[in-house]
Amino acid sequence: MGSSGDRGSKVKLLAELVGTYAISLFGPSAIVVGLLIPSLSDLQRLVFAGMVPGITLALSIIVFGKVSGSHVNPAITVTFASAGGFKRGLIAPYILVQLMGALLAGLTLKLAFDSAAPAAHLGSNMLGPGVTPLQGIVLEVIDTAALCLVVHHAIAFSSDVVKQGAAAGGTLSLLILLFGPVSGGSMNPFRSLGPALFSGYLDGLYVYLIGPMTGAALAGFIFRMERLRPASRSLPKSRLQDAHRLVNPHHLPFPGENLRETSRCWSRDFKFDLRELHEGQRLALLNYIAFLLQPFDNCGNLRSKPLH
Image (cartoon, rainbow, N blue to C red; front, side, top):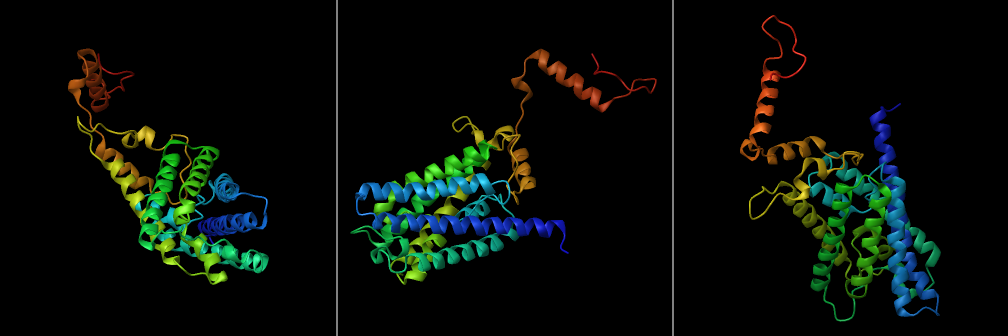
């Protein structure tokens, strides 16, 4: 029998496996199904291909958000690690089960759509006409960084998994609509890897491995620097640096969230200036400090209230 911690880790990894399988299956499937419906216009196919992954991600966060954090994407795991809010020991297991989920999804796509819509290559991501691989990488860095920053802020300011799911899923759909016709709109290396491997369409696959991971690491670094940025008159402290706002007091942190490190960062940034208080506030504060330093009166009895 394993320990309760071992069982908890297994549940998290299973949730990541299922969630990654779902988004790596339904995202590419939307592309294939769209091509199989001849009555749809190109715009309708694009909207369908954008909405399905967004809805899948939102539902995954709602169902698994309190269990594993519902990363379901190695780029999300990397961005949390880059921001300093995820245990290093969980990074490799998360990415491994995400890879397993994506490969299982690729196999399912192969079994379901092998001979259907061959031009779709099982829903593989493709660069738009005239877009070079370098341009594709840059665009994937941009859209993945945008998605990751939205995820960071959604978690920082809300404990409601429905709101978190709506923010992340809606952003994913919007970014696919904007970047899909140009760069392929992957933002998830393993979502691209599954259909590419099982369809044999490997053209430009490295674009979707390099771009999203780079964008994710960049977004995590930006979020961390914003959180740690010292306040000044020209650059006032942002909401991300306020301890009572960075994480909603009712927020259940994602498993593996490094709260000790976060608390250390908050305390380092906290500044207090007695000169900002008026005379009455200063006297009240000094009296209370005196009470804390000398809680007993001359007779050795505990004082019931601060000195006056």
